Length: 409
Image (cartoon, rainbow, N blue to C red; front, side, top):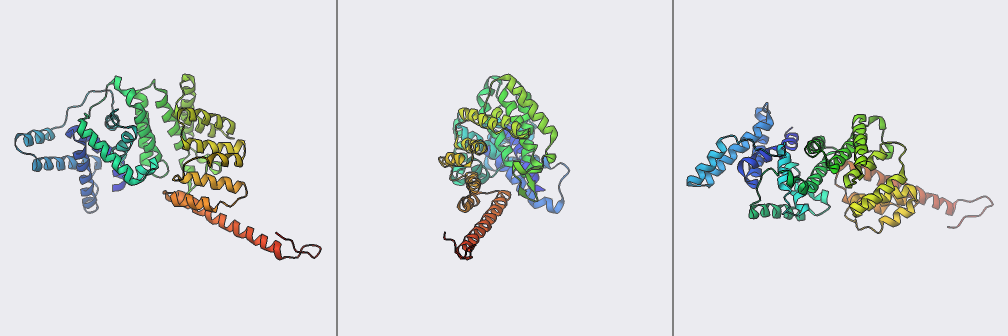
């Protein structure tokens, strides 16, 4: 229960306290203290009727206590007085407390990856390790980025205020990246995170209705989320080709496809719109793989990354065969990425080659339990197939053939 409330309410509590305090570190520390207190008290006293309000009130009281202990004279009285009263509602263009903090964290003076990482930490309630996995970097590297981003905010005195209309487009790229990464972290088994990302996407669409990429992101999340119930079976991942489409959320599919059609009429393609279009093609069986390859070609012009190239190669395997796809992915520098090795294993299997080493590499790098279960099952199946294959060769070496001769290797 506390874990669920933490995921759902951590970001809002930090947002509220940051606006009240004007101090990011103090707000985060106070909210963390409040959740620690909740973990101690709630199992004994029960969960309060309004747990989110309890967290915010407790965090605010902790901040007041800390300020009273650590400040002196008039400064102490001024800051404590500030916290004794509800803040006036800030007038601005961003109507949601969490989106306010997303936009303020996505200040242009911070590097894009620092903006995304910091906002995921504050808004998504993600651990540093979870954020590091999303970026495919070591946890220590990500921890340093987050510390540096906070330090720059303090040193540059970056204000926590609502951006005006003129500032919104400049911040949009990082904001969209944040929302999508929160969705990616949650859609498989943290439903509250995925739902929060979709909710933020809808608020963004209301805020910026003429931005095609905002709508593209919303369509992408809806189409991916529509397959949630078919994605897992008995705790194991079911790949797209084997999913029971009757379990797909038809309303989300229809809404996502409708938004994709709207984006096509805009004729201002961007990465999220193209990814949404790819998922829309998958939503209309049978998949037109030539269209998928063409869309990935377009995506590579906007986002030339090895991960995009890897996904394109999966589609190439369906149009040009597994050998051509294997040649393409072997040229990619994605050794740290478990999906790279999982795709290699699939292509090797289709080519009649031993996928064991690739599956072992994928399993070693995979983090999610469902992904590890899937890879573990594939590894056991591959080992069994190799054993059967070796047995067949052994039989060929020793069993008499018609005519009384043994067959050589």
